[in-house]
Image (tube, rainbow over all chains, first blue to last red):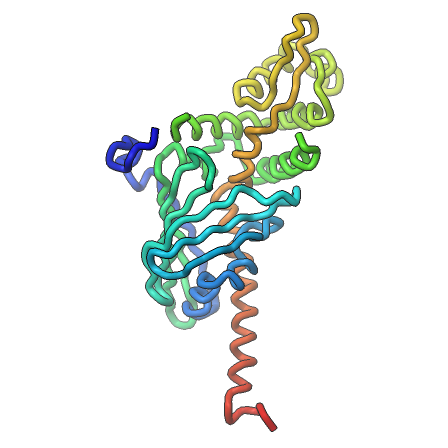
Amino acid sequence: MRASAQEDPVAVEPESARAITIKRVYDAPARLLFEAYSKPVHIMRWFGPVGWPVTLCEMDFREGGKFRFAMTGPSGKQNTPFGGTYREIVKDRKIVYDNGFESKDAGRMVVTVSFDEQDGQTTLTVHTVFQSIAMYRSHTSRGFEQGTNSGLDQLADLAAELQRNGA
Amino acid sequence: MSRAEAAENLDRVFAALSDPTRRAILARLAEGEATVNELVEPFGFSQPTISKHLKVLEGAGLVARGRSAQFRPVRLNAAPLGKAAEWLGNYEQFWAESLDRLEDYVKVLQQKEKRHAGKRPGGSRGR
């Protein structure tokens, strides 16, 4: 059942068709943004969407070290943990890690976070390569043909309600 | 289930949930099972329309139909929502919100750094 990357046909799908890049410019030095990424005490203060705090945060922040996070949603129930390995760490410049949910068939992604400081501003780039186009489609808005953010907000409310009701 | 199949299932769940009528049907079923007729009344749609929506929800594994031939009550099956909830708000929104929060947090770090700089030996510290 478990196929290696070499045998897995989806692993050869063109990378550009299963990647997404998100950028943000900060009025802050790269070293502070890098610092915010490097310790649980910081991660727990900002990582994750509003209303979904990180409530499990284990990290061995060095190349080859592992991390494991979980978030607790509005229902109060801790969500499935996710995590992976830090593949490359260049202080104040770059962090590369693989990541995925600890559920069966969840799929993996490789995330490269770059910190590019210029004239006191830092461009933070989060580049994610999903394992397959199918995974990319199910995780990004391009997978939702009719989906809009407001629809997804309602969905979040609904799912929280359903979980609260113990359905 | 292969990864591709799992992704397809997730696609079906999100497609099923992308319609407000179907979300309303699920919210109604969260209160308890219902027959098709009981679903027709509150939504003001025809029975064939409701049945069409139920087929989509059934295909996504979000509802199950009872065996009782006469009424076949519809029941909510919330299990696939667990998978969908893992990616609620989707990946871009996840990062948009995280990076907003990081913007606030890095300001906190900057303030802290400034305070510490003011406390360096030779500063105002240690009278």
